[in-house]
Length: 162
Figure 1 (cartoon, rainbow, N blue to C red):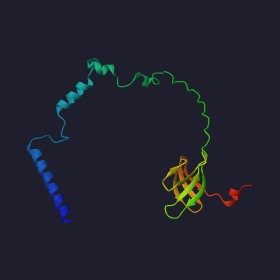
Figure 2 (figure 1 turned 135 degrees about the horizontal axis):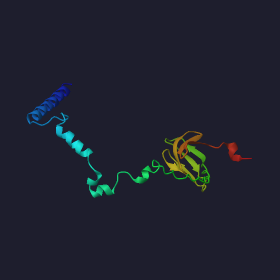
Figure 3 (figure 1 turned 30 degrees about the vertical axis):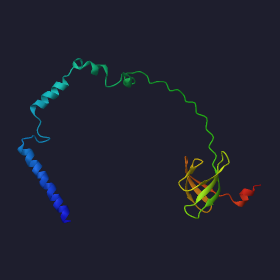
Figure 4 (figure 1 turned 90 degrees about the vertical axis):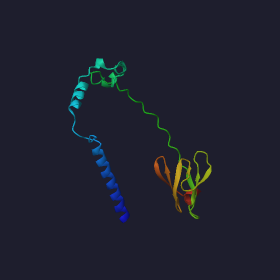
């Protein structure tokens, strides 16, 4: 604690020395009163005629004339009706065919719907457009383009089919 107070005292003394040196050097304080010549220079800027500006400034106006087209009474462009794009078929979800919960971190076995290949993912890995987040005994949670996705293991009845 004593070191912090000593450091503050040194900084305060340094600032005091800088203020005294600034005052002795005769420098104008920052933000001091505005001189009478400042008002004259503002009047001179206000009276500037565009014809007195350099040619390069005149050739490049600040605003493009087209930006004010609506304000001058020109009608806005006609709206063209948009033809809806054909809906893309939703990508098929892979099928969860197995999970590994021990040893940690575990993983999930997926069958890719596109090519039928079986892939194994550990948490954090990406496969078939899904990133594996967590695994439990009967499900796996993924993060995909549509948000969180939970895939359940198929039961023995579902596997047998009708």
